[in-house]
Amino acid sequence: MSAFVALDGVSHSYGAVGGSAEGTLAVDGLTISVEAGEFVAVVGPSGCGKSTLMKLATGLQFPFKGAVRIAGNVIRSPVKIAGMAFQAPTLLPWRTTLDNLLLPLEIVEPHRSEMRRRKPEYIERARKLLASVGLGGLGGKYPWELSGGMQQRTSLCRALIHEPQLLMLDEPFAALDAFTREELWCVIRDLHAARKITVILVTHDLREAVFLADRVFVMSSRPGRIIAERPIELPRPRELDVTFTPAFSDIVQELRGHIVRARQG
Amino acid sequence: MSQQLLIRASPWIFTIVTALVWEAACRLFQIPPFFLPPPTAIAEAFVEFWGPIYRNSLYTLSTTLIGFGMAVGFGLALGLVVGWSRAIYAGLYPLMIGFNAVPKVAVVPILVLWFGIGFIPAVLTAFLISFFPIVVNVATGLATIEPELEDVLKALGASKLDIMRKVGIPRTLPYFFGSLKVAITLAFVGSVISESTASNYGIGNLMLQAQARFEVPLIFAGLVALAVEGIAMYGLMAILENRMTGWAQRSGFAQN
Ligand SMILES: Nc1ncnc2c1ncn2[C@@H]1O[C@H](COP(=O)(O)OP(=O)(O)OP(=O)(O)O)[C@@H](O)[C@H]1O
Ligand SMILES: [Mg+2]
Image 1 (cartoon, rainbow over the protein chains, first blue to last red):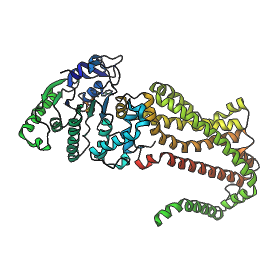
Image 2: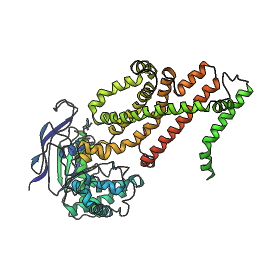
Image 3: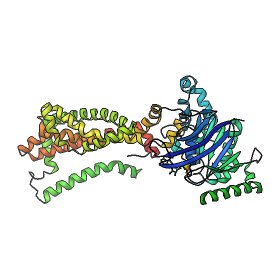
Image 4: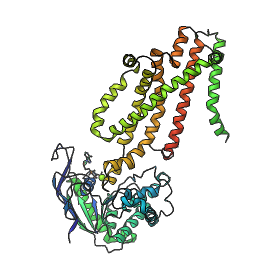
């Protein structure tokens, strides 16, 4: 099996002149590789460089040392294939929910040049996607007419509408209440199962990481590196009940131990 | 319902009450009309000098609007340029602050030197005084795009131009239309400053002549004419803002 996303001995610092170890060293000697179709979660202490890892993997930042490869090719510009969602939904308030979903299609080729011709088809696609996350019939609403959870669903849909090969999620559920969060876990789980896309999820929530991921990576405190890698063998499809089993709790406890050590060391 | 009616009527009520208090104070304290004329005297001056007031008001309105129009065009263009690039922003900002700090009264003599007295200095003063808030607001709108949203778009392969077209410019519109209200009021200040020192026409000039002839009610009539024009233009800009970017108010989008 060949890696789809691979970071190889990557170091990155912010605020350095000409790219070097000066400035704020965010990650140092970071190595991680993600298979195509795999669901990977990254956990670690606050400020350890998780968001930096996301930016490096999508070509939004470039390392001064090491290489970032996607499908075997070293990346030198933003990837053009990734869907991203963050803690803040960042929807455009002047567009309806439906029009917000169409935004990626107005940018990504080939949809971009076919927008005019295939618009009805795209609108239908957006409607279906909204319905699949429980927002059927709300396409005409503006984002500020939706609740926080609904906005976050919309943001997830926007990350998925162009059917990306790579989905990058940076704490997308952090601002939500526990019930909505668990509901969205299931939404993401089903989307991943249905589409076989590669997902990289950054989270602070160890239960979330264990419930969703095939593998969980633990990062050290800044400058971040991978200090532990834990495959999650829990069988799929996973139901929320699994989070109450001893096997599940054991894995969460184990990961918690790594984090505690990472924060001390 | 009655509450809403009250809110609608209250600007008129306040204006009328202010005028009544003013009138009463003038009579009660027997303030000489050549010091502070009562509203009735100002109204009389309005009737008596309606012809010149009307003509000069139109003149001032035209210089103001032409200057304002130039400020909108130039301010929008410069704002887009400044908001586009960090380097241009850093380079131009101190210059613009310095320029804005110069009192425009001090610029009028230079304009007169270059263009003679009259129409052109008034238009240019209105322009110079009113473009700054437009530039700043447009640039602010562009510069405050959420970095995360930018990341989302870049990871889709969006160019800088794409990001400007899809996000930057739409989100700047509320800032832009908001700045027009400020700019139009400033444009009046500019044209009147210029008219009252270097012109033979306009409300500013009318007031200057009235002062020379000691026709104090006419001076005040000129002030009232300016206030009415100012309110009308401000109202127009507010309506325009509402029409163009109503979403910003309904969504509670960050303003200024
Ligand atoms: N644009 C930036 N300029 C300068 N320093 C930065 C920038 N972004 C991040 N950093 C620094 O790099 C380090 C890693 O930041 P990063 O955002 O990757 O952490 P994180 O793991 O995502 O944190 P959190 O869990 O709080 O989201 C931090 O120390 C931060 O101060
Ligand atoms: Mg982060």
